[in-house]
Length: 192
Image (cartoon, rainbow, N blue to C red; front, side, top):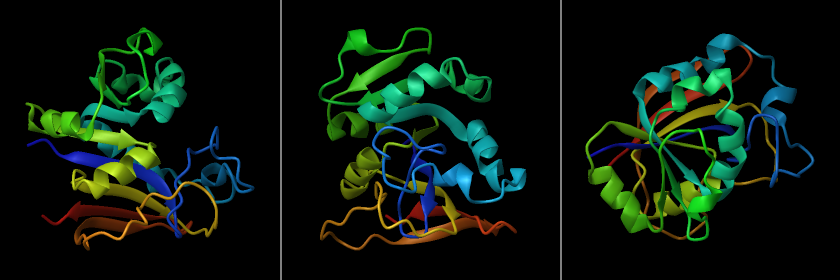
């Protein structure tokens, strides 16, 4: 069974945003990842480490539409170009897929994600896609969280974790590190 890994930048109160802010992140603190915390390369080394483990990418429609045109031509994301990509969406059409960014498959349901996890291959990483992550977590499909926790409370923005009244989900700490700028790397496995 392939692992499904959520990776993201998260505030102490559970808000996830793209590094520089963007559509859907119009709250007054949008762009907080790069604005207010001293940049230390070692604090972001997790992103490079993830590249070694990533064998496929999974996005929600909005994150795919935001990332695909930028990451396709980005030297920082060149390693993702030829990886298989999946988009979970009931509304995205085949003709809306970004050309020149490798094989992309549209999944229509959580059941399709279950089948993807059963396929051959390694870890599938979800970048951004907070709503998708919440839905897949509620369905018990996320296996690991790779988080960079920022020393900030935002009070507004997209929450990573569900507010649904559901069964408790236990996590096991796989790895952690704290950096002088206050960022904490937290890698948790979901206990099954």
